[in-house]
Length: 413
Image 1: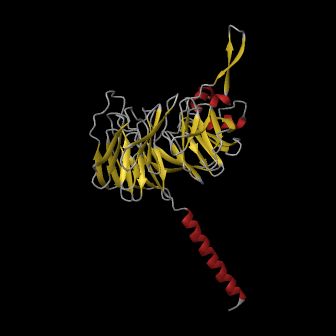
Image 2: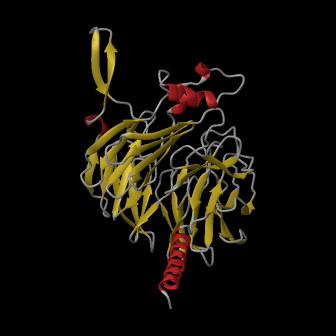
Image 3: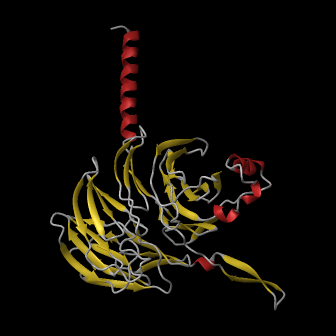
């Protein structure tokens, strides 16, 4: 066999191996998405086609409902107390569970604003009446019920054999096998978001932006006090001078945990915290339009409607934080009108993109290569990592545009 033939065979084999490797890397090509009227979609990201959809179009009240992917099923909760198990591949309904407790007295509240946990052969959830329940996924009958005795608005989480429940001013741990109380931890300020578990530790944030790292027994390992790092300056008319005051942090989205970093934010700040020590590593701000920047003004002009002018775009629309995600060495943040990418090591702003007129609905879903999001026109888009090329993925996402408090929820597999 001559050398040229051997070289040709080697190149062909190399290309084949490379091709297979590339194919394995891009396995996650299905996006599952639910909207604030209860609709659930499975969308093929490679083809832009809808694999299946379950249309609810709930009209009686808002539906801040989510889902949990478990093996070949999707377990989705609905605002009326219903939990449905879907076949992930086909969308076929496998079984249903109906929460029979009465809806709380206020019609503006709904039974679920969370997704169920999956523990062994059970799914576990909390409801607005303060009950934590374990349901056998085969029989759809309760295994146990624990009463927190306080409204529970967000999803519980699990660590080991413990279920961690946010009950407002208290974090409560119960046994996942039998529902027995283990311990609890009280806080000065309420916790607006679900606990986050990462690397065997529990992270929570209170409404003032103070973050806590806890062990599995709910012992505090460190506490980040935001006012030790951030202060505001206000003018005191009586003293005729500027005075330093505590900053007013309003945590609109949950914290995010990476390998070495905890990130949290509000309408103005994004804060990077050392995951091991709880010390602030960096402080960044959400971008606003710099009217002196030709690049910023050009971005705004590209998004103007015919009935708008430059100064009809308000900066406060830019600064409503919807999500924070850590991807590789970057922190990705989005508001309704801006996507911003920061260096996770120092908080420096690397890239930004303003999107006005047809704004983003809720949180984006970031991957290594693309950022996915739904805009007001009901279209699912993807934006490449450079923030330069936006592509339509799928048209026809149904949602309630009048409900500004709930937004689409997405997972990619």
